[in-house]
Length: 257
Image: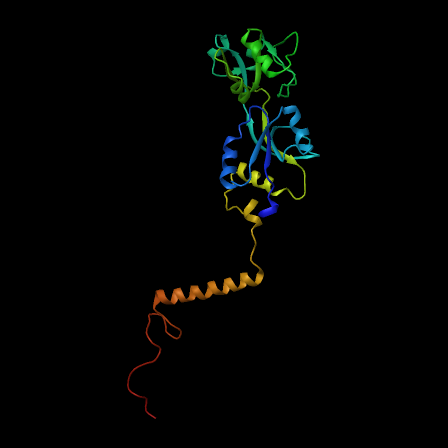
């Protein structure tokens, strides 16, 4: 992957709450000549952006349309409840869904959790966004359940959060348009998020010229000869010399005729 085969840049989409910093840093170390462009996109629009070619790959939330996108699950986020700092729930380190039975649980239109039945009591209206729901929590209108990264993203001094047991969770994945074969730069980023080393047999290392069968055979013969010479040097033996280093000829009186 050299010269004209390398695109001018690599576009990586990511949804709010996902932090690609560590992977971007490794990218810049390994491919300093190929800029990486970050594109933040709402979760609901991430799949369409990738399918339309707006980015080479994306850090998105599952599920995705597997008919048009490939995906590698990366991690699952803990679900937390966002509450005012003076809320009674703060006395516990963890919260159960029955603990929220008497609470007004806000359900924003961009909610990321797959609820069969929303806990607590429903609000009169659904907030337009998670950011709007956070404002309502701060105003004492209700509580909000979100992936932990979103609670951190929308941090406020007057709010806190607690993990919620047995709540639906959000899974983050690396996704890209289905192509055969997978583009080289996408393979590079897959290797980075999976922790492959720079000398991995996949990714850029796999695109380096490989020796021919004739060259491999020649190298093998050279290696065998070198190994024999080293063994002889280490033992002090040569061809025709038995173990122990003594010559094969015997000394003594000549045999009579």
